[in-house]
Amino acid sequence: MTTTRIPLLAASGIRKRFGRRMVLDGVDVAVHAGEAVALTGENGSGKTTLLRICAGLLAPDDGVVQRSGRIGYCPQEPGVFDHLTVAEHLELFAGVADGGRLLVELGLPPDRRTVAHALSGGSRQKLNLALAVLGDPQVLLLDEPYQGFDLGSYIDFWRHVRQWRDEGRAVLVATHALTDLDRVDRVVELSPVPDRAAVPAGAS
Image (cartoon, rainbow, N blue to C red):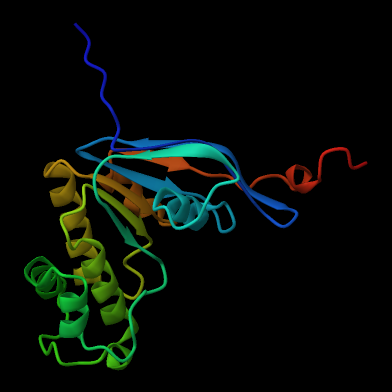
């Protein structure tokens, strides 16, 4: 008897246009429990747009997204509050223990009284990533989350990806680095939509 695996995240037929520009045209992606998938593609191929749609932060023009369980989303640009301390961020997002442990493992300076705007770019991104994993999400959507990391933190990040996968989570990581592709189970590549797709129907 064959058992059908049901993905924790499944996006099908996703279309998204900004003005006259079609960014995504019928994109499909699915991630199962215990799987790490890399989302690749050149700049402008729609990686960030697709992740935001999968996270429920942006509505597609067409297509369906099905999610099972809690979603953790780490945007490319740190979504932190400049005037809150590290500790206040962890308290605000209600997961001090888990987030604090990840920050230590990624090498964030131990003084939790530091306000976010005083952190380096890499440290802000570490805080950004820690906030994404609070609450024990079953699906992790990570948009080039290691920007500004030093080599040690970068390696630690991928070690955590393997750990999250082994815990049965579904992990989707947007990346442009070809060296990352051997660290995942599967690769989904996006290509920019040709300009002709941006021409309204009926236009000559």
